[in-house]
Amino acid sequence: MLQRPRGTRDFLPDEMEQRREIEGRMREIGRRWGYREICTPEFEELELFTIRSGEGIIQEMYVFEDKGGRMMALRPELTAPVLRMYVNEGRTLPKPLRWYYFADCFRYERPQKGRYRQFWQFGVELIGVDSALAEAEIILLAEEILSATGISFSIHVGHLALMRSMLGGIPEQEQKRIRMFLDKKDFDGLSEYLSSKGRDDLSASLIQLASCRNLNDVFTITGDLPEKERIEELFSILDKAGITYILDPGIARGLDYYTGMVFEIFARNLGTENQVLGGGTYRLAYLFGGEDTPSCGFAIGFDRVMVSRGPLAPSHRAVAGIAHTLEGREWAITAAREFRAAGIRTELDLSGRSLSQQLSRISKSADYALIIGHRERENAVVTLKNLTSGIQKELPLPEAVLEVTRSEPR
Ligand code: HAM
Image 1 (cartoon, rainbow, N blue to C red):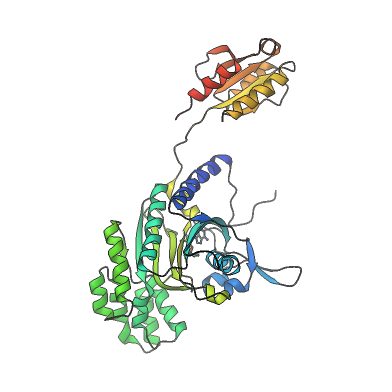
Image 2 (cartoon, rainbow, N blue to C red):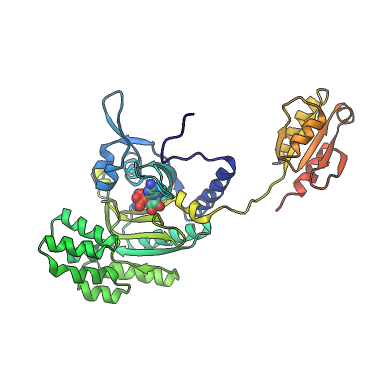
C-alpha cells in the first residue's frame, strides 16, 4: 500500500470542518481590521529565499530544477513571496497595504507533533508604513485572532536594537550565533561560545539583558539608543491597549530579514513545538528590486493552533436523506433541490435498493428521512420521518422544508 509522504497529513471531513471553522474566524477578524486576502505561487525561484531568509530555512527547503534548468523552491514561508509580489504588482497601490494569506508552506524538518513538512500559515503583512502604531496594530491584531481561536497563549515582544547595541564591533556571523544562544535561553552555551572568542566580558550583561522584563532596566543595561523613543512609544501603546505581554529582549527570530520589533507567541499547553506565531518589522522590498519599503507582519502556525485547541464541540446542522422508489425518482430529485436551496445538507439515495434498506442506511447518518414513492408523487407531498423521535408525517414539500429548517440551531 502506498503511503503519504513523511511529515504530511491527510484530513478527513470531520477534521476539515474544524479547520475551516477556525480558519474562518481568522479570516473574519483580518477582514474587520481592513486586511484583504492575497495569493502567491506555491513555488518560486530559489533565489527569492536565499537572498535573506537565513541559514535555517535554506537548509530545510524543498529545492528542484525545472525542465528549463531553473532552480525552484517550494515556499517555506510567505513573507518573501508577498514582498516579491508587492514589488511586481503593488508598488503603485495606495499605502499602507494591508494583506493577509492563508496558505501552505513546506520545510524539510524532522517531523513530530506540531512540526510538519507541509503546514499552513495564516499571516498578515502591513506594507509601506514605519511607526510604533503600525507595529502595535500587528501585535494587537495577532492577539485578537489567537483569542478568537480559543487557545491559551503568552505574547513575547522584543526589539533587535537592544541586543545589537551590545554587540557592536562583533562580526555579523558571530552576532547571529550569539543571538541564537540567547533566543534559546542557552546561557551555558553562550558563555562557552563567548569564551572561545575571547569575549568573556560580554556574557554577564547579555544574559542580564535577555532576562530583563522591564523597559527601564533594559535601558539601564543598554544605555541610550537611537531607537529608544520609538521602543518606548510601542510599549506604551501596548500598555494602554490593555493587552498582556512579556517584554523579551532575548528574541532573535530564525529568519534574517527582521530589522526592529520582533514578537513571538507561545501556546501554554504545548510542549517543544509551542511557538504558534512569529513576526516583526522587516525590510525586504529593496532586495527584490523595489524601493526600500518598511513593513511588518506575522504568521500563525495554523496546525499548531489546531493541536493546542483540541477538538471543537460539534455544531450540529440537520442532515436529510431521501429514500425513493423508481416511480418517485423525479419527485425525489425535485425535493432534494428544494431542501438544498433552503441550505439543508441533503443526500439522495443512490443504491436503488428496497425502501426499508435505504431507510436503514439513511438512519445511520441523517436526522431526517424523506420517503418518496408513487403515492407521494401523485399527491405532490413527501413523507418526512424524524429519525430521532421516529414520528412520521405526510406534508407538502414546502412544509417539510420548514420543519427541518426550524429544527436547526440558530
Ligand atoms: P516563522 O516563525 O518561521 O515565521 O513561522 C511562523 C509560524 O509557522 C511559527 O511560529 C510556527 O507556528 C509555524 N511553523 C513553522 N514551521 C513549522 C512546521 N514545520 N510545522 C508546523 N508549523 C510550523 C515566518 O514564517 C515569517 N514569514 C513570519 C512573518 C510574517 N514575519 C513577518 N511577516
